[in-house]
Length: 109
Image (cartoon, rainbow, N blue to C red; front, top):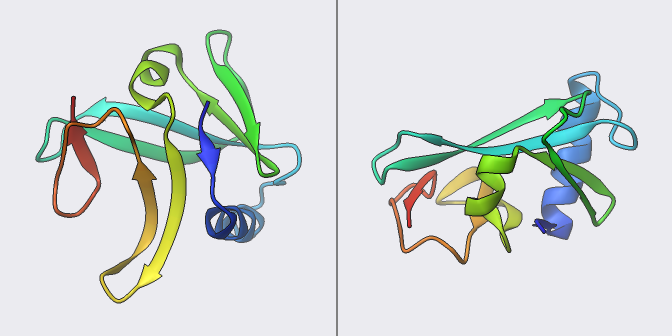
């Protein structure tokens, strides 16, 4: 399961609406790909369609889809949004990550 904080929910709905997506019917696709300074990086985008092997979650009114491979890396993760002085953007609080880079966009297990 992937959780969504209240601040992330508000930003997701705002951005989905700006991009022509409907937050009540469309999804956030969360994934993991090779790359970044720690070995793996997060991938986040909006999507209207669910694929056959996707896992589907809903938390805090946000629908999330994750491909089967990425799901293993993301179990228990919370999606948050930071708008502070150190940078603005989505942050993944991943309990499975042993090491993360300074920017928080990549990790290793």
